[in-house]
Amino acid sequence: MKPLSPSPSADALAIGARIRSARKAQGFTLEQIATSAGLTKGFLSRLERDETSPSVATLVQLCQVLSLEIGSLFAEPEAVKISLADAPHINLGGRGVDERLISPRNESRVQVIRTKMEPAANGGEAFYTISCEIEVLHVLSGGITLRFVDREIPLEAGDSLTFPGREPHNWVADPERGAEVVWTIVPASWRGE
Image (cartoon, rainbow, N blue to C red):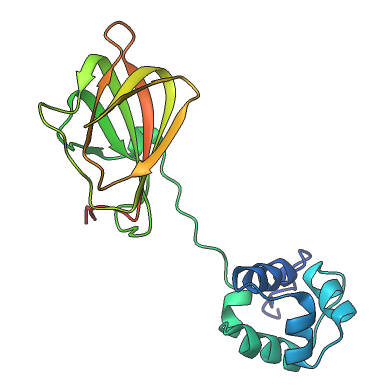
């Protein structure tokens, strides 16, 4: 009996979207990349829509022009799933909270924390800062008041607030309903490895 050899996948590789994404991320037009790679604008447009298959030489040329590793066009995107039930408990100093890290511990580009707050839960006695560029607070349910040195901003379910992480702040959950929120910190303020 002959050993089975792998058969080609019926799923087409969608490398065009990856090429388009790289081009746009670098701020280049179709015409600029087509000219640099020695291609027509129409061919590159069809390639980006996965309507045509390029030769290996064309892929190598595009990768050079876009400063991409050719293997990156074929690699599966890195995706990490964290179920809320499996998310690690963390403690950033808040009182009356259940905080869970819902982004990977080793992710340095962004940190996402889901916090369930009891009624009147708070961030402690004093204002604090986070070592990051931006914080985004999104309220899932209940209410929370974000306190800054010179003002207070009440937020309700569905509201989001973006502010500099280095801005001294604190917070208090609604005294009757509490709150459930998601904090997004960019870049991650700490790595819990």
